[in-house]
Length: 163
Ligand SMILES: [Ca+2]
Ligand SMILES: [Ca+2]
Image (cartoon, rainbow, N blue to C red; front, side):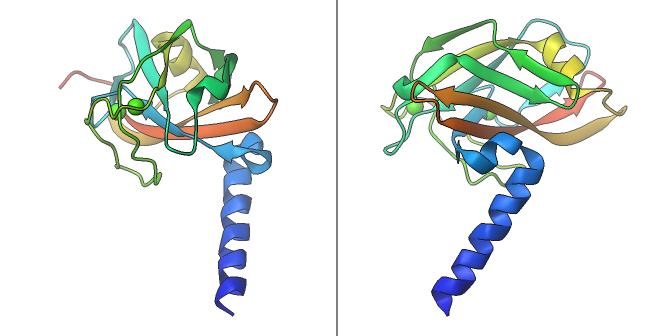
């Protein structure tokens, strides 16, 4: 009985994830940290420059398996490829995916894969944000060298003003 209810919950979760990201339904989830070592993750809609994003290594997941050329920000208005990437241990995974959950903890001894996205390209792909302040999840997709798709998400606080 307990197993059955777990299976039902898993099924529901997969359905929910499928609605959010078609890739995640076929693949697996990775831990993503937007602005490593920053928590929360403010994103001013007028700011320029780069948005740092890390896919985090865990005991079960080696970032060396990721094909960095396939990693994209998945926005409402289209996908955005990263400007560049690097291998460095920058953060510790906190990836239960709860809104508002993040960490400013730094390196944990496990290698991470860091990306720099063009902030304005990402903001355009998000679409037209409302004025004021809102918390939204940003989704990232990619594939391993074996061709296995994955998705990851982290949240930002979109702001249309400077605090
Ligand atoms: Ca962060
Ligand atoms: Ca790490």
